[in-house]
Each structure stands twice: as C-alpha cells, then as structure tokens.
Image (cartoon, rainbow, N blue to C red; front, side):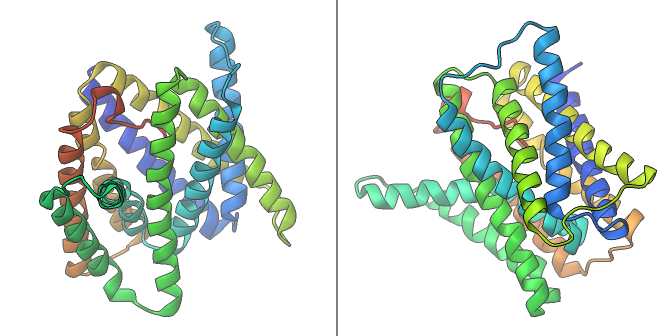
Length: 300
C-alpha cells in the first residue's frame, strides 16, 4: 500500500476516533480523563502485544525523556478530547491541527531570542494567517463558555507542538517510534486513571455500547498511529504532512452529517485559512529541517 493511501486511511481513522469521543462524552457522559485512560490502556496492550510477537524491545535508556514527552502529549490529548466534547467536531479538530502553526511561532521566538538569526517574513505571515483563521472560527460563538472551550482546543495544538519537539529529540537518541507511542499510551492510561480517581463521579458504569465506543477510541487511535508511522517510513515527509490535513475535511463531513453542526461561512473560511497556514508553515519548515525531523507520528 502506498504512503499516500496509508496517510489518508490514518486521517480517516483519527477523524472517526473523534466521532467516538464525542458520542462517548455526550451520550454516555464519560469524562475526558476516562476516555484518555481507556484510549491509553488499549494502545498499551496493542503495542505490548505487537512488541512481544515481533521480538521488539520496550526497554529504554531515556525514561526521563519519555516522561516529559508523555506528560505534554497526555495533557494535549486530554484538552483535545475535552474540546471535542464541547465544540463542533470540525472546530475542535482544526484547533488541534494548529500544531504546525505553533511550531512556526516557536521557530520565530527562538530566532528572536538568539538575536542574530533573521526571521523569515513568510513564516510570520503563516502565523498571522493561522491566528486570523482562529479568530474567524471562534467569532460566531464568543460566549464566555465557548471561549474557554476554544482555548482548550488551542492549548491542545500548542502542547502537541511541544510533544513533537520531544518526539524529535527521542528520535535523535535512537528511540524507535513504537516505543515512543507505547510509553505515551502507558502515560495516558496512568494519568487518565489518576484524574478519574481524584474527580467526584469520575468513574462511570458501562453499557455494551459505551464500552464499545471506548474500545473503538483506543483501536482507531492506535491503528491510525501505526498507519501513519508506516507512511512516514516509506513516503515523503512533506507529502505526508500535507495529507494529514485531510483529517479536518473528514471531521467537517462527520460534523455536518452526524451532528448537524451547521457552521457559518466565516467559520469555514477560518478553517480554510488555518489549513493554508499549516501547509505553508510545514513547507517552510521542511526547507530548513533535516528529513528525519520533518514529521511526528504521534497523535499528540
């Protein structure tokens, strides 16, 4: 199977996972912490089984690096699931996909702090376009409650960008992707359990449909990560990064067809601007980044 087809399937699985998260939270009242816990538990079991059957080692020499990567990734995932439960699916997915634009902002900030580096004006333009898109996406619903939900979605994208930097650092020290995702999944299971235990009413009983939705979240997310890993290992990073934005398209279709989220024209224009800015930031970063650092296969 070609890398492009693998990426398309991965983005479709991630968008479908978002549907399961939204239904689990709205209809069965599972909290973000619970969903993160079950998602992490399924991922941990799948990757542990995969490692055992293929004779792969899960032992690491850099546990501290995995801890910090898992911490940022799990918080990002929790905020994203929370945003999915409170916002239209297309909006929550788009805000999370701001990670490329946050990366561009980090590059600009680093260049300014270094003092001598010249900031590429095109990079500044992509950041401004991206945040103009955010303003258009959130403007139709600027109640105080909706504003905080939108900030949660934005924060999930920013923390995903930080997790990306940590994944890159782990790659530099020789950690394979399956091991990175395994410890990230384990961190999600542990953190989700702790949050649920410390929250009044944090645990819910299960129905068959509710349990099936939680299982689907874990299976879809893990399957998407594995497909994406394979796509990046055999395909061109820039093409794969561009195809990732199909996740927004799939989420928009789900949002309209399943949840009747009829976003105004300004919101759709904002989503388009964010996609355009994300693609531009990816392209500009790819021109100045070694090939092995141009991608992240982790969900957050």
